[in-house]
Length: 115
Length: 114
Image 1: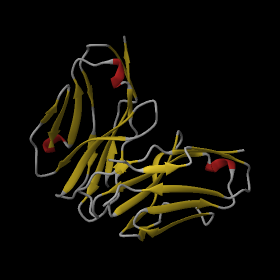
Image 2 (image 1 turned 45 degrees about the vertical axis):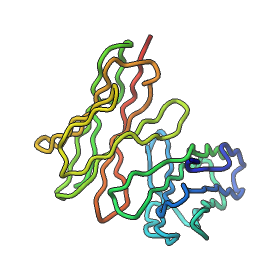
Image 3 (image 1 turned 90 degrees about the vertical axis):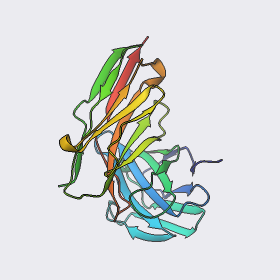
């Protein structure tokens, strides 16, 4: 079975450019999460969706970040305009159902470098 | 406060040694869930185990075992006869029934040398 799929795996862009990260959750999973990992801040939850509805976006650093989930099998995280401090690994994860008792399965991550 | 503490930043062992990774959590909730994840050098996060607060039975899976003790708020992870492939960063995490959020510890980097 396919796990969580993320694209691209690596992205290098210049400051000010728009960046779009994509995620396909595991089929049948109803919750989707976006995380960011840096050396300084560790793993941070940016936003999560239940049944395609954003539930908590309190981790989104600022208005330059936005996320959408138009259907159960696709989500995007967009940064516009990008800044060097956005450089990080961005993970998408999915879990079977809403509720804290379900484990999250992570994608391979997108390594973003903003120059 | 709800928090996960992994006090060991980095551990180095030689192959075949046993190693225990500590995880201490804080919560006043009576219903909660604990997790361990592995992040190998390739970068992906791999789910290892989930335990709910009502199940204090220890668990063994091959060379891996987990010791959950509510009395000390700990959920420690032991690797028996460690191998080079066990080298990774290991994260302990906490969540609750009424939220999907995972509270991660800062991770323990395990290096197993041949």
